[in-house]
Image (cartoon, rainbow, N blue to C red; front, side, top):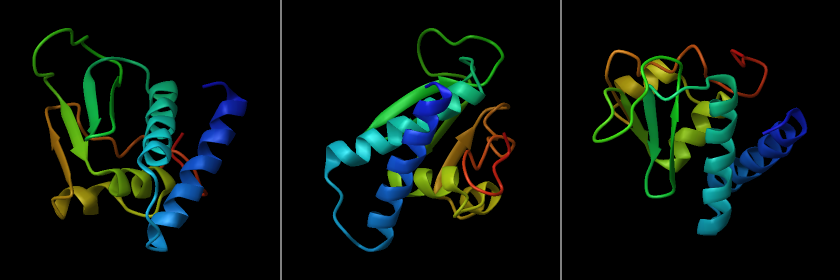
Length: 126
């Protein structure tokens, strides 16, 4: 994503988050687009292939500088649901709290995304 695309990504992610919070059923393709926009932004600010971030069943991305993963299960994996992912990237949920509550599963030495989240908003880390 370019800088302009990042703004468009934020608008989509924020709109979908608002719909989810209101209890609106978000069409799967729109939810997937928002999740992918947020993963794309994470890939932009933390390029690499040492951590796989999975948002099943919608998308996954490899991010964070370090050793490159090519086959099999990556040495570091982060997995959560779409709603939690969008809350994290917008700063509506804290990384440590989400991990502690068990709604984010993070394994491996490089799987702590706290330094990169939220991606957008007044408390954005990057």
